[in-house]
Length: 452
Figure (cartoon, rainbow, N blue to C red):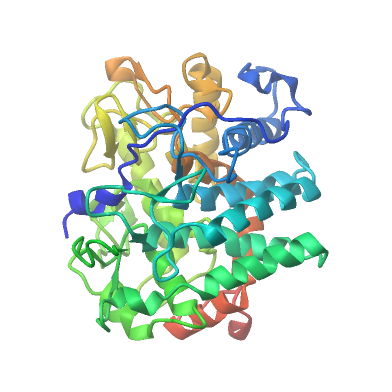
């Protein structure tokens, strides 16, 4: 599998339209319309970026389902009903942050989440797994491509990374929160992870379609953004996969182990220079990398070095793109001047995505804060909006996106919060199923009870 094939299922080419407000998270900050206060402390700036970005998942949520729209600008003819499964998982994690930081009340958030769960419980699913896109009003599948019109196991994994955090958080035992717990647990236990081994092979397949079967034929091997899928598949209680699926599927490929040094940082796993930064972000919104190890890597080292290599490359700026430097860095998958691309040091066209550096906060706090300030204070008149930072920009081409993507907005909120409090990491790692799954695969972590 080459890098182009790896990203085929991440090309965010969908739709949206005009959202309807569910509540008013701008009550505490009247400037959340997109105005930029310039006399602001670092802590207040982090508050503002998190809260303003949350508006994407709140004000702009689909009014029927509450699910997250794929993107903020209508494109490619998909209309304004398209919602995204994985991006909704990121949105659920953002909802938890919003309650914890008192932007919305717990009662309001729990009712919103329950509406979403009731919708999902009736939406199209295939062997328990959801499609990449669905109609936010009807729950019917919207094909991602001609043959990708069924289950998407990676997107489903991102969704349940968020839902399991929500199940652990909304635990007060009242009627609404009991229903939240029961609904999430029922859908979680309904996922037939072992079905996606395509008849018992020792690897997981990304897609299955009732119309096209296994025609997409995409076995998922590491190292990339899909680690969370293998963790969840091993953690399932009703339809789990064996540890061999992880060790002989995920960990057996010609681009899994690395061990080379780039800009002075040794990279244990993955592609040369680490690949796009979402590799060290999407799976680790809930999965806590602090002290997390298995026979292959120390994942804190993996993610930190990946982030530092990306930063060092942008500082080095071998292609001499305008704007790159120690305050302007971050290569990942994002919109760009000619479509959408997954950028990295080995695939660089001058486009910086704010989410890349911002979602790296736990690993590179100083470098990420410097970038955040540059994006906000120096470039804010071009990229700061009512939903936080626009998706990307390319100063060499004087191009600035007018779009926002759910899968880019969510990691900004969640990883800033994990940097500040570790909230989502604690919630996800507290799931007994996840503890069992990590043990099964041979992981050790300070967060795994039996490792203590």
